[in-house]
Image (cartoon, rainbow, N blue to C red; front, side, top):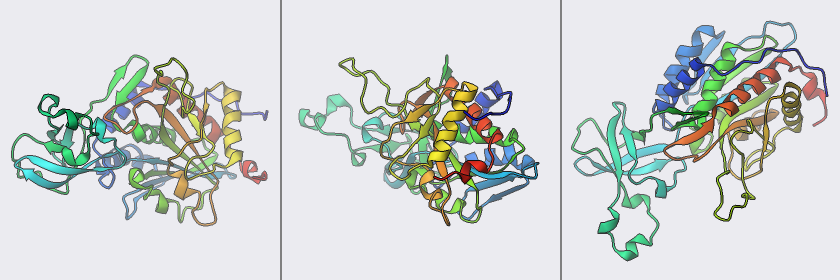
Length: 359
């Protein structure tokens, strides 16, 4: 194993938890990320050598290196979350809607939502079970059978507005719970890294938009930045729930409490093996827990980033969370802290010799 620097690793603080709470409770459905972008701007623009918002809404901040020799690193975290869009007022105060991003209709009924810029409260309504026929109960609930009900006519609520789950962030002992932890975790971690960036890297922090509807923001964010490498930080589903037969699921993606998950590949990316091995070396050297995210379908912003220009060596690093793409996600604080530490140590020890090795 290579010799690495003697570092004082960052630890999770109450300031981090408070910031994650603010980010989680913010409403920022894909295509309407302004509430989270406003928080990002407040937190890091005063510290940035440059800060801009591009035509799609990506927020991009740069912190220059303080050493003659440095590595240019693009770290991306998406700001958007799954949600809904109102498409038609069916009755006064009752709206037909469509999901924005991947949401299971079976998990929608009865959930509380916030609608529009004024956060008007509403409920996703379905017919109560005792008023349905036996045949209807056998059918899978479909979006067309549901409505967003705001209780009464409200002239400020119109078709075309976004809605998101009304789930308030909370701590649950060693865990946290909230909506949109995919990927407010990544946003929070990237803000922390930007504030404590090691001096040997030029950090390009990209807070991207529209990841949940096809990694659209990331498709343009890296185009003219020419980083030496990229790391995408995100949240990944933890498929670690008990099975009815007591056996371990053979298809888990990651598990709570075992550290951040390093992607080897997914449905869109074959991660750069040099960076994968480097992250695991750093993990071992500093005693930071980490795990290998088992190959599955899906993808992250790494998909478009690694194909930009002549190609960018890229890897994804994600915090495991249970109940992804639902009204609430549960994740471990220890995994969150380990992700901050692993990224910090990896950046602090980084030099261009890593990429001089054959892929």
